[in-house]
Image 1: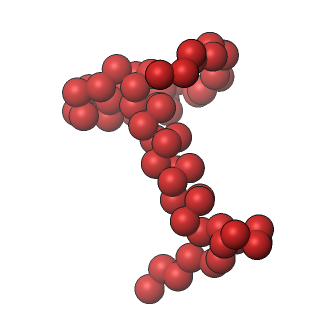
Image 2: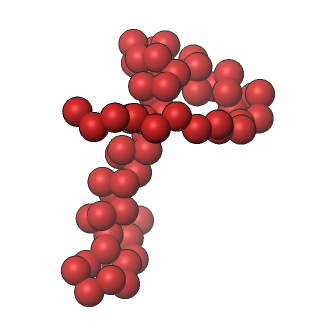
Length: 61
């Protein structure tokens, strides 16, 4: 696995409390939960972008 890079993330206290509770529900650390959410967002973003570059609009019916 590649080395991980540490950085500071500033989050408002209410959001932090919600993220901590969510992480606990999913049996993850707060760091693990944030990594998971970012990973899922990146997967979704990649699916929306064609090879040409411009994103395809997502349809929410």
